Figure (cartoon, each protein chain N blue to C red):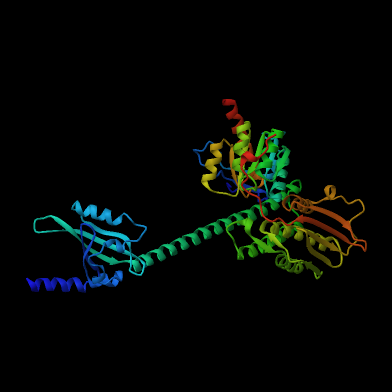
Length: 354
Length: 172
């Protein structure tokens, strides 16, 4: 009998899990070595004292609840909760509690097996956090892809609109002049440059994305110089950040104005972009003979100039002036606000209805 | 194309993209050429239209297409809120409405307009999502056209949408 008890004691003491017992008032009656390691309390320090010593202060009712269930003869299996070590550290534990009965079958207390799961819980929380991070990245990537998709679709719409307008323009002739097709080709390449630059740092929201005017105009003019038959295009561009939509519009405007200057005037072409007090001014000028004295862009505008007027007024919300420089040559100046952000989602109830 | 169409730059085949169980007009595939559109459209001629589209270049294109069809562009707007005002002021026959716009999107604007009066609203969008199409249909719009568009595509679709609108109105 003694040998059996010694064997049982050896098993209990060599267990990796804490094995403790308490009476129905919660007073500790036994405490193995693993319990000493997990809780930091020596057996002689805690036996005879309340088990409440290891219950965290934020779980004040837990001991009484457990004792009530034990009195009712209930078994509690793999219950995950928190416990407090002697030094105050909170640990995660999984506990199983079973009622202890005397020889008459009366419940006299409870035996508890406690496993320290702090490490497992920490890994679980880390995994959860990683999962949330991956899910967030995935959502951002999806939105960025949707944004890119929408932008590509928009570019295709712009290309389609330009081709369609040329078709309508020349509907009577039944064909479009080669020069106009070449001009369309330039516009498509311009859209491709802007798309390239915008896609390098795609954001989820188009309205968020800004791009350097210097970079975009630099690349555009490089392309235009390749087809300007040896004519030089000088540029002075201030470092200005443009919204993605402004970048697309401005590039189409510059493309049109520079192509016109190369086509209609001799000498070099100058392009400049200056910014002051939130307003940008684009200037495209040449050394040619200038605009005729009666030039009115509204009346004489070809499709290209009509496009420029439309883009500056509507998309850039700016204004445009056609003038001759004092020293000779034509100059087109477009002024437009450098928007801070795009206003969105105004509630319908705030819209005044006439 | 039946293999007999002239090899013209202007010839396109139009295939309806709308499901047959839709209340939107479903038409047999039609081949059109711009040559047929020189004289405008009998259905659309003289009709008043408001164009609500935030992309300047697309708006210019839509104006040209509407003029080509013989319509009168009585108003334009660059966002949904401005669009509502323009439509309620001018009371056009047809409203061409983009979806993705600043300030107020086209679906909300269409809903607000249709609460006020019955008009042929045609949605025009780069969104190919079924959700938006279903929502537009639910609102009582008469057509949902996918960008990119051109005259040969848009005019017949506008004709179909307007014819459907008038027959719906007559039925009521």
